[in-house]
Length: 305
Image 1 (cartoon, rainbow, N blue to C red):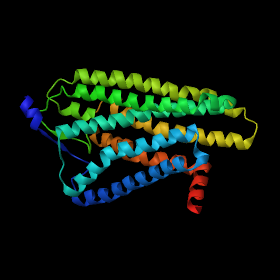
Image 2 (cartoon, rainbow, N blue to C red):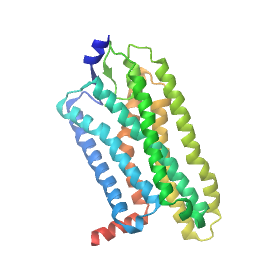
Image 3 (cartoon, rainbow, N blue to C red):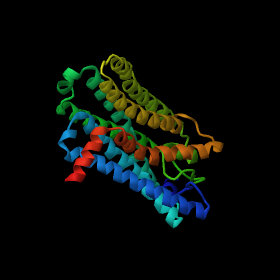
């Protein structure tokens, strides 16, 4: 069994078997991926180069841009390669590596969204103490915690997945490797891994959810008491952008990892996989940039130079 596991090749079924459809999907997802890289790189560049954006909010936004580029790059290039070459085989080590990096960046983003919520809470509810609480020392430590926690979370799941053996059907009904996909085709009893996913994902997700949404109870109450209409609209604009990003990320993640997948739900599962792996990383910079006057101003200053 171990020798078989070492040489086994898995097959990524992908999104379609129809050649014209595959060509159309290649063009569509290539454009989405290029737009993802361009928009996120632009936000990262603006935050780094424009002094007016050197504050905690945009520091976390630049981290979000890096994460969006990273976990989109884990899945998109491989999918585009498969659509062009019609070669859907992937080695088990490559599949395991894809699982690790996708979980790493996705979990890091989950924690980052909580940190961004905390930043908004301090900025709106404690504006006079904002610079003291959200110092660069604090932001740096939060960034380290975000990236290290994501690494540990992903490493635990990846190491536990190494106990799985594959000796039967080797078709993964998706365009990339993920834990739920491996559980469906393994010859080993995946109960331990499934329990671990529900326990860790549930606890981490619930904790991050509470840290993300509970501050908004106080934030909304504070915004409603702001007298000036301009300040109230600016605060609401910042918060709604963040909440929209959080809602899209949580809804797609919950369906993929916490809702049991049956055979007749493969199509819906693929749709949510596309959303979380390809659409989210593009929507995030668009949501923040289109609703953010400071980013627009920084972009205009860059063009004028």
